Image (cartoon, rainbow, N blue to C red):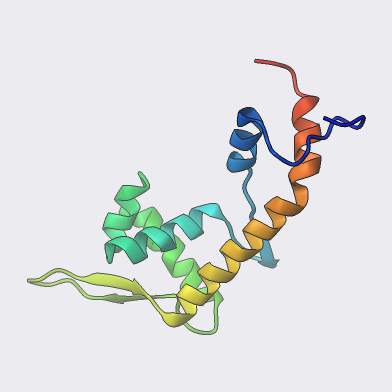
Length: 131
């Protein structure tokens, strides 16, 4: 640790946990936001192929998951998620190419932001009371 309380760049386990729990939420324009919840839902949807299964995997109701998907689909020039109607074989949903691109851009921005604030975050952590 140097005189300013900074480490050599290698976070301790407590610092690493705190950095891991730091979240980035982007207010892209008035009324349009993208953050960890929507990103996690898009990733879960990509994994599961279903809005309801994606929601369940995140302890989210189908209605909440559907509303979040609907909001991102309305916000962008093209939908981020395409859903097919249910039926005998059940429905499904998948990310569109634009959905994959938006998710990738968000995750890249998140990594850059977290790297940029890590030193200051470590200083703030040292100023916190011990539990």
